[in-house]
Length: 497
Image 1 (cartoon, one colour):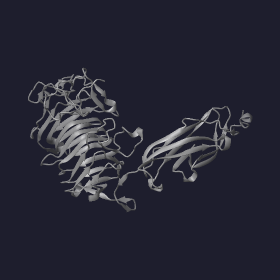
Image 2: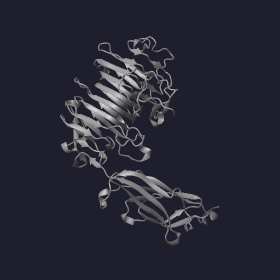
Image 3: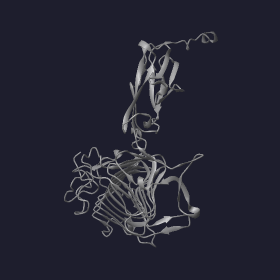
Image 4: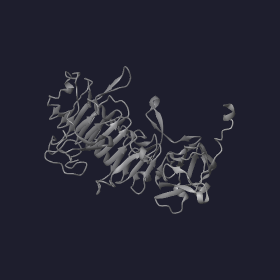
């Protein structure tokens, strides 16, 4: 046995002779922003023959000037020689790129960059195409202070002060247009007394751990408008991460939040989608007028909470929130809230969830011994759907020393109490018409596809159909369709699937 094993010819191979097979003939690296690295894509090379083969050369068509980078069977570079593949075996080629759009003469805002991976030479040459769409953008980021340090913002005061990587927007940066997408690193902050205006059709992208911060007496106004073509949504404003590859399109927690800090006021979001954040919108307290207005807003895939308010003052209509690891909406430490024709859903499936879609409290637990309370002045939900994949999708927690005023009208709610745990709790007395009026419990809303954030409801099937109170704003739904008489609950009028 020792004799025969010493004579094996595993490493004797023959040339590939153009007989390689590939897992794909073109590698599409999807869309990337200028100067932001792509994901790593793979290509598999197969040797289907009964003989070990040798590939004389593997190289990029543009050579060392190529913007692509390769890793062939564990070796990094742009050209390789004498790569072995055993009989009936395969190897991987990994491809990635980082492209600076400014290295090209007169580039468009978006252009295709292409190259080829060439295998062997002459008459035996085989090739696989490489294609990447590169998009130019306006980059906003904190100053580099050297030694790995970057500009920071200070939150809080005294011992409670914390610093986060961020910067204040200058006056000439306070209008986001739709000419190019914006890419933000760190937290872009709006100074006191200033307003950030986001035009219809703008696209705002965030790097990891980044977001927007609105300071005391500052504001943000997002002016998305109804699109002429609902399929294109060209006039909607979208906030999402800077990873444009399709596999990142619905991954929660890729960036931080849009944080309207205590004292910010008169914030508005119209025809806006916010997706894949840690917290979609974070609204801190303000003792004055309305702090936040939401019209035709969608918030999806939040790693923590979709809409989180602490003593907030919020009005919302045609709002849809889904897929949060904790709450779709958390109204904490009191406040004042009014929601009409909104869909608060939570079909989170990435991990275990025991929290309801909608939670209201008039207190905040600071420590084991300290509790802060504030009046819940108003929390009105009219013509809404509150549903999800948990049995109880509303949660109400009251501290008796402060006001706790809430009201649900003409809404579809999921609240199943099979064990009778809440039957003696007056907060969940669905027969009490002073706090629950014309409520439908536990009937399937028949959403089109909750997993894909499609919350249209099915005609003649949905439990939310025709249960709405008439003459409640807004008169059109999120599809720009006139509401019927009586209207359906939620952000959408029912349709035939």
